[in-house]
Figure (cartoon, rainbow, N blue to C red):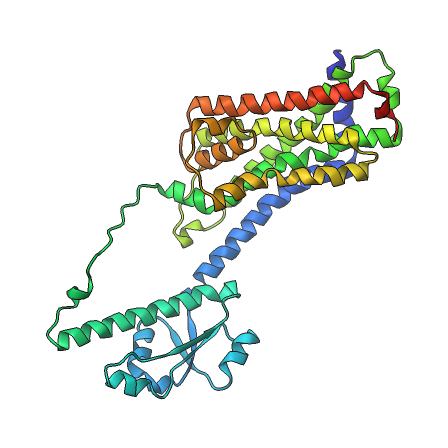
Length: 387
């Protein structure tokens, strides 16, 4: 058996036997999709919670026509007595609508009648209801304004100077993928989490247990040893990433996205594109973790170093979220960033050019081999054996 295969087999068996390392490697691929499922359901519940709206009102009798307008739109009105601000602050009410006594006089005089909407903008669960109430009040105001113009012999059309006709060129799949932009981040993050325990244990862990010396005294080139350890950790990282991808797609299929006007479906070619775009990142992640593990004096010390790497897959998502970019071919040559772009395009139903896959895979593997080569050089130093 080739030395690389021997080391790979040994590290893989050790990883499968280590229940703690195996649990830490597989926990994220299972927990991540579950979290996606519950987050999406929570978001849907928040956005659809306003369908059955109950509105507490102070001074309901001051605006009978406004109240009737809201009843016709499915709002259940409740009289409210007490301190509206205190009720909202204590979260006893999501919001309270206050209609002052001066409302009727202002309305009769043809002036702008003022109503007060007491709400807490820091409460995400109340935002949907508050937006709906504001929209209904705005609609009622526009209707009354149109009637006042008609009463004066003026067409309401004079108030419509410019009308926007929206022409949406993005497909429903692309719109859904943009709303689900956090899903690619979870899939990419799995590559940095699933193989971390194996990569750290194969370097800093063996160094701490003083078993690395017994391995290095064998007449085997250090490059073979590093390659075997790296490939074993990469296998765990790749499996964790694939498991996260499959479970995330399964979670999306169980979420009623149509309730928030999103349509998302995935076909076999898209799944193949997702795998092709993300798989090289598993090899890059473990190569960096193996390199950092060499510098650590203990397993715990290595985890603190490698924990910083978890921020790398989050960076591309943050960049595109706060600073949207126009995708260029050269961007697919940036490891990490290219995987995020490819995964987002494929999820949106786009078909990236073949050169994009080639550039992303090639540059990622070249950088991974650079880290592996540097780790192999360090393995030849005696300082590696001592903590």
